[in-house]
Length: 333
Image (tube, rainbow, N blue to C red; front, side, top):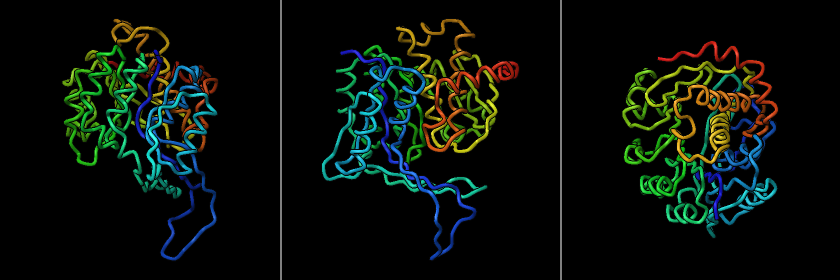
């Protein structure tokens, strides 16, 4: 059986409060709205893809959850969306959850219980690659999947040799060691990281220098997200600095996943399974893909929660309004 897109990574229940005026002291309490959402990058990217117009039947979400009611939430939500499920449910274990504490004018605080994400095995993912033979293999947050991390290079190699376009979204691993990524680099088509991960990966504080260092991995397409400052992109060692779309930032949680979904949606439109076949020497096709993904990430922050702001019509409208300005600000070097 062939499947177009396989999204692998974390499944995490997001517990998020509406921002409060100030952090509470000991024995203090406050009444505020608290939302509970299915999340984690595997779920978010899968769901965002369908919101961007990719047929749900073309998307498979792979991850681990417990036998608890929170695990039932993922099964139910994916079922409602019509997304294919490859869920490793572990009896007697608890689904991962994160409490995101928001205080106005402050950066969010994150309290993570990694739950069964720590038990997702590379063998489970490998079997799905063999069975589904996806055109696109997306791996997110492997740094939070300790068993997967140990066999990460072999998994990426297997996906590449199975003919997949391999797309990796990073997260800083608890150990701080990136050896798993360095060993897998020759089988990765696209690498995306944020500025903190780029600094950890390369030891460079200047992001232009970090991008130059990442080019030494010889990954065809590398993207560094600079949040509101835009993107740095390297494709075949040609570098671009791309301005950000300007939107009201209501909730930045999930913006990176929306960016990845936008990129995957663009790259999965054809049957070509390599970036060189997709882009060739076309700067225009590359920029069209990156700008669409950037607009998806920007649109994600305009509503609360990871998914609410991501709608294809809204993304296309943002592009109509701002693409000319963004393109005018692109620098190549």
